[in-house]
Length: 235
Ligand code: OAD
Image 1 (spheres, protein in one colour):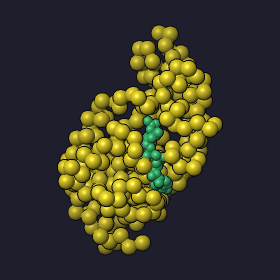
Image 2 (cartoon, protein in one colour):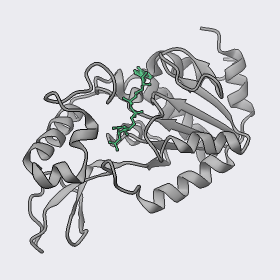
Image 3 (cartoon, rainbow, N blue to C red):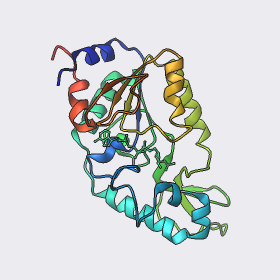
Image 4 (cartoon, rainbow, N blue to C red):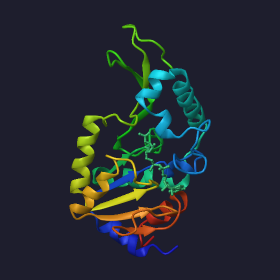
Protein backbone atom coordinates (compact mmCIF):
# COMPACT_ATOMS: atom_id res chain seq x y z
CA UNK A 1 0.00 0.00 0.00
CA UNK A 2 1.56 3.30 -1.10
CA UNK A 3 0.46 6.02 1.29
CA UNK A 4 3.29 8.53 0.83
CA UNK A 5 0.98 11.43 -0.08
CA UNK A 6 -1.25 10.74 2.91
CA UNK A 7 1.75 10.34 5.24
CA UNK A 8 3.00 13.71 4.09
CA UNK A 9 -0.36 15.33 4.66
CA UNK A 10 -0.30 14.01 8.22
CA UNK A 11 3.22 15.21 8.78
CA UNK A 12 2.35 18.72 7.58
CA UNK A 13 -0.75 19.03 9.74
CA UNK A 14 -0.42 20.88 12.99
CA UNK A 15 -3.72 19.99 14.64
CA UNK A 16 -5.13 16.55 13.96
CA UNK A 17 -8.33 15.01 15.26
CA UNK A 18 -8.89 11.27 14.94
CA UNK A 19 -12.63 10.59 14.76
CA UNK A 20 -13.55 6.94 15.26
CA UNK A 21 -16.52 4.61 15.22
CA UNK A 22 -17.23 0.93 15.75
CA UNK A 23 -15.13 -0.14 12.73
CA UNK A 24 -12.04 0.89 14.71
CA UNK A 25 -12.64 -1.99 17.13
CA UNK A 26 -13.97 -4.52 14.59
CA UNK A 27 -10.68 -6.35 14.08
CA UNK A 28 -10.38 -6.87 17.83
CA UNK A 29 -13.57 -8.90 17.53
CA UNK A 30 -16.06 -6.24 18.67
CA UNK A 31 -19.08 -6.32 16.33
CA UNK A 32 -20.03 -3.05 14.60
CA UNK A 33 -23.60 -1.78 14.91
CA UNK A 34 -24.59 -1.81 11.26
CA UNK A 35 -22.44 -4.72 10.07
CA UNK A 36 -23.62 -8.30 9.60
CA UNK A 37 -23.03 -9.19 13.28
CA UNK A 38 -24.68 -6.00 14.51
CA UNK A 39 -27.89 -7.54 15.83
CA UNK A 40 -28.21 -8.77 19.40
CA UNK A 41 -30.95 -11.36 19.88
CA UNK A 42 -32.45 -10.07 16.66
CA UNK A 43 -32.60 -6.49 17.89
CA UNK A 44 -30.84 -3.44 16.43
CA UNK A 45 -28.91 -0.93 18.54
CA UNK A 46 -31.55 1.73 17.85
CA UNK A 47 -34.06 -0.52 19.57
CA UNK A 48 -32.03 -1.61 22.60
CA UNK A 49 -30.12 1.58 23.32
CA UNK A 50 -33.04 3.81 24.19
CA UNK A 51 -34.40 5.15 27.50
CA UNK A 52 -37.84 3.80 26.52
CA UNK A 53 -36.58 0.23 26.11
CA UNK A 54 -34.68 0.48 29.42
CA UNK A 55 -37.85 1.66 31.14
CA UNK A 56 -39.87 -1.25 29.78
CA UNK A 57 -37.21 -4.04 29.78
CA UNK A 58 -34.34 -3.02 32.09
CA UNK A 59 -33.05 -6.56 32.54
CA UNK A 60 -32.77 -7.11 28.80
CA UNK A 61 -30.84 -3.86 28.35
CA UNK A 62 -28.51 -4.65 31.26
CA UNK A 63 -27.99 -8.13 29.81
CA UNK A 64 -26.92 -6.58 26.50
CA UNK A 65 -24.32 -4.42 28.24
CA UNK A 66 -23.14 -7.34 30.39
CA UNK A 67 -22.61 -9.33 27.21
CA UNK A 68 -20.68 -6.48 25.55
CA UNK A 69 -18.48 -5.95 28.63
CA UNK A 70 -17.73 -9.63 28.91
CA UNK A 71 -16.73 -9.68 25.27
CA UNK A 72 -14.55 -6.58 25.75
CA UNK A 73 -12.73 -8.06 28.72
CA UNK A 74 -11.29 -10.69 26.41
CA UNK A 75 -10.41 -8.65 23.33
CA UNK A 76 -6.91 -7.61 22.42
CA UNK A 77 -5.77 -4.42 20.79
CA UNK A 78 -5.04 -4.86 17.08
CA UNK A 79 -2.06 -3.34 15.22
CA UNK A 80 -4.14 -0.29 14.24
CA UNK A 81 -4.88 0.53 17.89
CA UNK A 82 -1.24 0.05 18.80
CA UNK A 83 0.00 2.28 15.95
CA UNK A 84 -2.52 4.98 16.85
CA UNK A 85 -1.64 4.78 20.54
CA UNK A 86 2.09 5.17 19.85
CA UNK A 87 1.62 7.93 17.30
CA UNK A 88 -0.73 10.01 19.47
CA UNK A 89 1.71 9.74 22.39
CA UNK A 90 4.50 10.94 20.13
CA UNK A 91 2.51 13.89 18.74
CA UNK A 92 1.23 14.91 22.20
CA UNK A 93 -1.21 17.81 22.33
CA UNK A 94 -1.21 18.14 18.53
CA UNK A 95 -3.56 15.14 18.30
CA UNK A 96 -6.84 14.32 20.02
CA UNK A 97 -9.12 11.35 19.61
CA UNK A 98 -12.87 11.91 19.45
CA UNK A 99 -14.69 8.60 19.54
CA UNK A 100 -18.24 7.34 19.32
CA UNK A 101 -17.06 4.08 20.88
CA UNK A 102 -17.78 3.28 24.49
CA UNK A 103 -15.31 0.40 24.78
CA UNK A 104 -12.26 2.22 26.21
CA UNK A 105 -9.85 0.64 23.72
CA UNK A 106 -8.20 3.93 22.68
CA UNK A 107 -7.35 4.64 26.32
CA UNK A 108 -6.02 1.11 26.65
CA UNK A 109 -3.66 1.72 23.72
CA UNK A 110 -2.32 4.84 25.46
CA UNK A 111 -3.93 7.72 23.52
CA UNK A 112 -3.46 10.75 25.82
CA UNK A 113 -6.69 12.61 25.02
CA UNK A 114 -9.83 10.64 24.25
CA UNK A 115 -13.22 12.33 24.12
CA UNK A 116 -15.98 9.77 24.50
CA UNK A 117 -18.96 11.34 22.75
CA UNK A 118 -21.26 8.44 23.60
CA UNK A 119 -20.00 7.83 27.14
CA UNK A 120 -18.36 4.72 28.54
CA UNK A 121 -19.55 1.19 29.09
CA UNK A 122 -17.25 0.96 32.14
CA UNK A 123 -19.19 3.25 34.44
CA UNK A 124 -22.78 3.64 35.57
CA UNK A 125 -24.86 6.43 37.01
CA UNK A 126 -28.07 6.62 38.99
CA UNK A 127 -31.07 7.59 36.91
CA UNK A 128 -32.52 9.53 39.82
CA UNK A 129 -29.67 11.35 41.60
CA UNK A 130 -27.02 11.05 38.82
CA UNK A 131 -24.36 9.67 41.16
CA UNK A 132 -21.66 8.04 39.03
CA UNK A 133 -19.89 4.84 40.00
CA UNK A 134 -16.89 3.19 38.35
CA UNK A 135 -18.63 -0.10 38.70
CA UNK A 136 -20.77 -2.20 36.44
CA UNK A 137 -24.01 -3.96 37.24
CA UNK A 138 -24.33 -1.75 40.29
CA UNK A 139 -28.08 -2.40 40.75
CA UNK A 140 -29.91 0.10 42.93
CA UNK A 141 -28.49 3.35 44.28
CA UNK A 142 -28.80 4.26 47.99
CA UNK A 143 -31.40 6.87 46.92
CA UNK A 144 -33.56 4.07 45.54
CA UNK A 145 -32.94 4.97 41.87
CA UNK A 146 -31.64 2.46 39.35
CA UNK A 147 -28.08 2.53 38.08
CA UNK A 148 -27.69 2.44 34.30
CA UNK A 149 -24.70 2.28 31.98
CA UNK A 150 -23.20 5.73 31.38
CA UNK A 151 -23.60 5.50 27.64
CA UNK A 152 -25.63 7.84 25.48
CA UNK A 153 -28.81 6.27 24.22
CA UNK A 154 -30.78 7.25 21.14
CA UNK A 155 -32.83 10.34 21.85
CA UNK A 156 -30.50 11.52 24.64
CA UNK A 157 -28.14 14.48 24.62
CA UNK A 158 -24.40 14.01 24.40
CA UNK A 159 -22.31 14.81 27.51
CA UNK A 160 -21.96 18.59 27.39
CA UNK A 161 -18.29 18.88 28.30
CA UNK A 162 -17.17 16.31 25.74
CA UNK A 163 -19.37 17.78 23.04
CA UNK A 164 -18.05 21.26 23.58
CA UNK A 165 -14.42 20.06 23.56
CA UNK A 166 -15.09 18.01 20.41
CA UNK A 167 -16.69 20.91 18.50
CA UNK A 168 -13.81 23.14 19.51
CA UNK A 169 -11.21 20.60 18.35
CA UNK A 170 -13.00 19.78 15.10
CA UNK A 171 -13.47 23.47 14.25
CA UNK A 172 -9.79 24.21 14.70
CA UNK A 173 -8.14 21.11 13.26
CA UNK A 174 -6.40 21.12 9.91
CA UNK A 175 -6.75 17.38 9.45
CA UNK A 176 -9.43 14.91 10.54
CA UNK A 177 -8.77 11.20 10.28
CA UNK A 178 -12.15 9.48 10.13
CA UNK A 179 -11.81 5.81 10.97
CA UNK A 180 -14.46 3.10 10.91
CA UNK A 181 -17.70 5.01 11.17
CA UNK A 182 -20.79 4.93 8.98
CA UNK A 183 -21.23 8.61 9.91
CA UNK A 184 -25.00 8.34 10.05
CA UNK A 185 -25.65 8.98 13.74
CA UNK A 186 -26.14 12.63 14.63
CA UNK A 187 -25.07 14.86 16.22
CA UNK A 188 -21.67 13.08 16.26
CA UNK A 189 -21.56 12.68 12.47
CA UNK A 190 -22.16 16.43 12.05
CA UNK A 191 -18.69 17.07 13.47
CA UNK A 192 -17.13 15.96 10.18
CA UNK A 193 -19.22 18.47 8.21
CA UNK A 194 -18.26 21.13 10.73
CA UNK A 195 -14.56 20.39 10.21
CA UNK A 196 -14.96 20.46 6.42
CA UNK A 197 -16.79 23.78 6.61
CA UNK A 198 -13.87 25.16 8.60
CA UNK A 199 -11.41 24.11 5.92
CA UNK A 200 -9.97 20.92 7.40
CA UNK A 201 -8.69 18.09 5.21
CA UNK A 202 -10.61 14.90 5.87
CA UNK A 203 -8.93 11.54 5.37
CA UNK A 204 -11.15 8.50 5.78
CA UNK A 205 -10.05 4.93 6.55
CA UNK A 206 -12.80 2.41 5.89
CA UNK A 207 -13.09 -0.78 3.81
CA UNK A 208 -16.35 0.71 2.52
CA UNK A 209 -15.81 4.49 2.54
CA UNK A 210 -18.84 6.66 3.16
CA UNK A 211 -17.49 10.20 2.75
CA UNK A 212 -16.38 9.92 -0.85
CA UNK A 213 -17.42 13.37 -2.13
CA UNK A 214 -15.89 15.46 0.58
CA UNK A 215 -12.90 13.45 1.75
CA UNK A 216 -9.79 11.65 0.62
CA UNK A 217 -10.44 8.00 1.24
CA UNK A 218 -8.21 5.04 1.96
CA UNK A 219 -10.09 1.88 1.24
CA UNK A 220 -8.88 -0.60 3.85
CA UNK A 221 -9.25 -1.70 7.44
CA UNK A 222 -7.92 0.05 10.55
CA UNK A 223 -5.52 -2.78 11.40
CA UNK A 224 -3.96 -2.88 7.94
CA UNK A 225 -3.92 0.84 7.08
CA UNK A 226 -2.99 2.61 10.33
CA UNK A 227 0.44 1.04 10.98
CA UNK A 228 1.51 2.11 7.48
CA UNK A 229 -0.28 5.47 7.44
CA UNK A 230 1.13 6.61 10.77
CA UNK A 231 4.76 5.83 10.18
CA UNK A 232 6.93 8.63 8.95
CA UNK A 233 7.39 8.66 5.12
CA UNK A 234 11.19 8.39 5.30
CA UNK A 235 11.32 5.46 7.69
P1 OAD B 1 -21.50 1.46 12.39
O1 OAD B 1 -21.70 0.03 12.72
O2 OAD B 1 -22.67 2.26 11.96
O3 OAD B 1 -20.40 1.62 11.24
C1 OAD B 1 -19.18 0.96 11.27
C2 OAD B 1 -18.33 1.42 10.09
O4 OAD B 1 -17.05 0.81 10.22
C3 OAD B 1 -18.86 1.05 8.71
O5 OAD B 1 -18.76 2.18 7.83
C4 OAD B 1 -17.90 -0.06 8.24
O6 OAD B 1 -17.70 -0.06 6.82
C5 OAD B 1 -16.64 0.32 8.96
N1 OAD B 1 -15.72 -0.81 9.23
C6 OAD B 1 -16.03 -2.11 9.42
N2 OAD B 1 -14.93 -2.83 9.68
C7 OAD B 1 -13.89 -1.96 9.67
C8 OAD B 1 -12.49 -2.09 9.88
N3 OAD B 1 -11.94 -3.27 10.16
N4 OAD B 1 -11.71 -0.97 9.80
C9 OAD B 1 -12.27 0.23 9.52
N5 OAD B 1 -13.59 0.40 9.30
C10 OAD B 1 -14.38 -0.66 9.38
O7 OAD B 1 -20.78 2.13 13.68
P2 OAD B 1 -20.66 3.66 14.09
O8 OAD B 1 -20.49 4.53 12.91
O9 OAD B 1 -19.68 3.73 15.17
O10 OAD B 1 -24.40 4.94 19.01
O11 OAD B 1 -22.09 3.92 14.70
C11 OAD B 1 -22.35 5.15 15.28
C12 OAD B 1 -23.21 5.01 16.51
O12 OAD B 1 -24.37 4.25 16.20
C13 OAD B 1 -22.57 4.24 17.65
O13 OAD B 1 -21.76 5.03 18.47
C14 OAD B 1 -23.77 3.79 18.41
C15 OAD B 1 -24.51 3.23 17.22
O14 OAD B 1 -25.75 2.82 17.37
C16 OAD B 1 -25.10 4.81 20.14
O15 OAD B 1 -25.21 3.75 20.73
C17 OAD B 1 -25.72 6.09 20.60
